[in-house]
Image 1 (tube, rainbow, N blue to C red):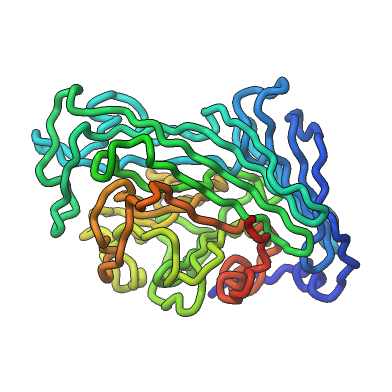
Image 2: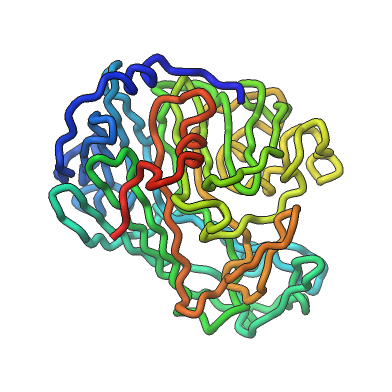
Amino acid sequence: MVALVSGAALACVCLVSPAAAAVKKQSKTINGVKVDLYSWKDSTGFKRSVALKKQGEGNPGNGGYAVQMTFDDIGGVQKANAPKGDGFGYFVSHERYRAFTDGDSNTIAGKIFKTDDSPLGRNFPVETSYGADETSFKSVTFSTVYGRYGTKKPGGIDANTGEDKPKIGLKKKLFERYDIPVKLTWFFEDGKTYPRLRVEVDLSKTPGPDHVSFDLRAPYGKLDFDGGDNPIQYVTWGDRFKFQNTDAPITRNSRWIWNVPNTDAARYNALVSNGKEMGLVEPKLYTKSALNDGYSDGRGETYATHDAAAAGCAGQELPCDYEWPYQSSQYELPYDDPNGATTSEKIAWGSTPFYGMSISSTFDGVSGVPFNGFPKKKKIVYDVCVVFGPHVAGGLARSIAEKGGDYDCARAK
């Protein structure tokens, strides 16, 4: 992997300060926003913090997500601040494109109700509940209600095409908007470098399987983690295979590899800019992941073997935007300049769009994978660790995903 090594990163390994056995929660105003500020010492003894926006209390919009993250190193305090009106760690989901009887492929929200099929969770109010309040371990949960359009009657899937079978009709009376309660819980632990974020999606208010069908992209959002308006140098992720663009900055014409098996490692997704990295790591092996990937024609290939035009994405070398397993730079790169970079630092998680359905397996472009899109307990639950720090050779998120153990991540409780 082509990468930079930060001098600060090397210094952090050598200069370790004593750890303080405490996680502190304070009410603060940061960048004009009222927050709960959680601070602790990481596994190297340096201070870290996450500022979570409060609901109400004079704040504009809604709360329940991070508007700042910091870490200390030999170079001083490094900050990731939210762009105005944004932040990181809220819920987003996309409806699956459905096969309609008129031959169209579209979402129910878009085609039938002329509305957004993937509204941003930061636009929904949250209820805040404080959980663990131990000296060295704290948690907080933000609860909201998301909506998903679906059919009133259950439908099926063509196993060969992944499309609706039978195709669905066009009259509004055939459809319903179902409430989907969502909980996002942050966990902070002294002596662990990265906070854990748990996502819980409740399907109990839908009539049963095969009404709604959607993906999961939480946690989602933006923090300006690179200390300036710098281009994204590298996008890197791991699912069944490890992905990395091999020339920088990343553009639609970047060369890339996505054929190195992600053996004995976790899923991860990360952005690299200006010697810093922000990413997400699921704290379990890929083979035991809580979520299935969507289909991608480029999975297991490289830019040299992949035909983007044949896959439906002429004019670029990168895999098709909608076939990336996680959301990050693919929709941020300019479409009118295949050699243009982006400074946008959006990052998110991702999954197959068949959650809510009763199919027993999904196809990721390489093989079928067992699938449970409507658990008996009617809850989908998964965790990620939120990574922010100096970029290191090979990648920070990747190194955590490959290390295993507790992933230097707060426990859940």
